[in-house]
Image (tube, rainbow, N blue to C red; front, side, top):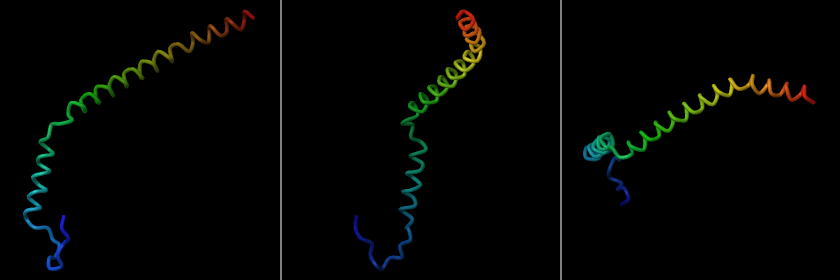
Length: 76
């Protein structure tokens, strides 16, 4: 990469703007990584379902554990 010359104003020329637009369009069309993103979304959905079911069954088990605790306490 060369040093900028003193006689240029530093404003981008039309070619660099076209190059940037082409890169942006190429990025938008690029399908690499979409499979990884799909797997991440599926994994997140599985995690949410698992966490929700554990929380649901955990809240349903509290009365059972309280009953077991009371029974053990009375047996002593």
